[in-house]
Length: 90
Ligand SMILES: [Zn+2]
Image (cartoon, rainbow, N blue to C red; front, side, top):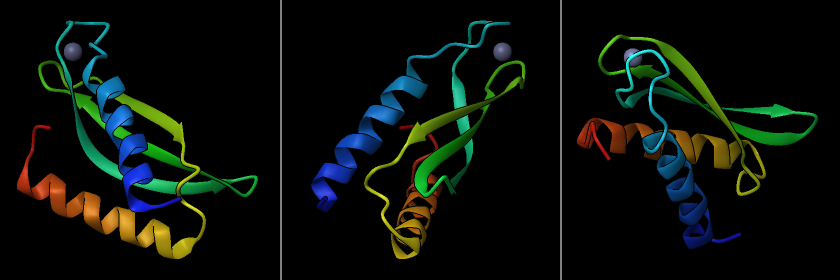
């Protein structure tokens, strides 16, 4: 899977998070941290989010077929963290 394909996955993950509202106050979630973990040898992307209004925490977990090894994990984590620093809203 090339980088473009990977970005499509990541974009759709962002869209899902962006279109999910807090069930307590209906505000949007902000991503505070990203991690990639391997469960049963399948990569999963874990977004730690919190409600921008009331602070309720929520996890979003996606299959991440574009992560095939530990180097991908490091690459995506570092790129994401750089982007997150540049733009706090996507
Ligand atoms: Zn809330």
